[in-house]
Length: 563
Image 1 (cartoon, rainbow, N blue to C red):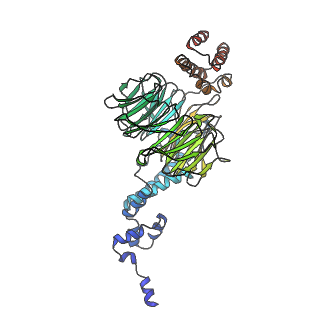
Image 2: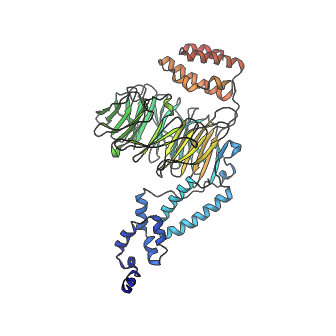
Image 3: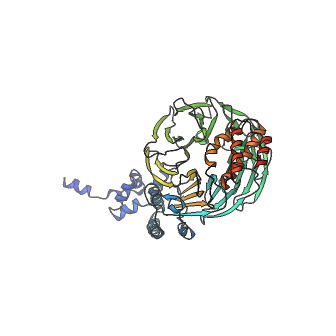
């Protein structure tokens, strides 16, 4: 026994070849590694070696982050979001506390980085996730501009692009929280826009039937791509090749560097389009999801099964997976290599969407998140498919969810008409916390998020309220872009409370579509500036004509003359 006791007292890791020691340590959890690092200097050297922590980072998909920012300083510190601006950030540091916290983190990460950069990366990643889950928000700011309220957002490293109802796209610098430039030349409302992966190009298509290409660094217009003969409704950019879908029932493939049209496909792709550089997945008004080879123009597959139009498409080309969500209340997962449906998810249990605009979905690995109205479903899309969680109830949203973002960390951010931004853990199927609550019955119209940034668009709901956007950095930073406060004529609210539904009815023909576009622009103008009694009476009459589906450009001219 004494002999055995002496054997157990030997430092077996120190006596093993390092390669074998690292293999053994690879089976330990990060928490166990930190415990073992306190055993001896030799163990600490092994447990903090970069090879050990690099493996832990790669197992979880952690990649290098940008250096920590100081967005809580400067002008942001004097123009923070608060209750006076109609924004409640549910847990918020003051400026001094935020600065002290940053200095402490710099010291901690700096000392760790000298020993093991990969361990420092792992700890920072865990800290960011902890910031999302429970820690106080580090800072916030409000940015001002003169646009009408924003309707869409795009976030790209260092840049934020906003589309608003004044038919303009604006580009903002994330670091200095200031507008960089406004993209000009677009005639009419932009319906789809994207940023190239390298940030060199911004592409936009919309009501004026053209695709415009701008320089992502200067805002200079590079190309105006003409060819579509109706409203461009969807686009997908891969590298420097763009695919655009239009109401003219064609798909066009463009080279955005040379500004040339490469191919034209005669297909109805007005609803959705996704592109991986070789294959295009599209859907229109015929209930079919089509898969095309853009180089040959060959239709590879016609995916049938939905009994109503497809509202959303996700395309994961590396796994040959397409996810389609339809107004028939069903989600289908397709193998586009074989052209077969592998999973069928019926989350409305046979019912159809009453309002298709309230449907959203996103995919991460085998986890699919979808939302409709105020409910969220989490699915496992592997063969057969199963609902893992149904997120709703006491901590859930009380009105329609307008936007969602699924993060690689397993966290889900959702925004709603109820004016709240909520955080969920989709792996455990649990509510985590409220991030933002808006006052005065305002609503969140759109949001985009990365692991370290959240951007939200806020919309006016009733009267006397500021419009804008909120931004959040997870080390952590919120902002709000707003314009001048204005008074809205309260008598207009009940008249146009279902305005979006009224606009949807204007689809009877070219004359009706044109009248609807003018009608929409006119209403937004009166919502912004108010109307006198005579104008209000005329607008009521106009609204009744539009409800009956009799609105035309000729009738609209008569009404406009009265206004």
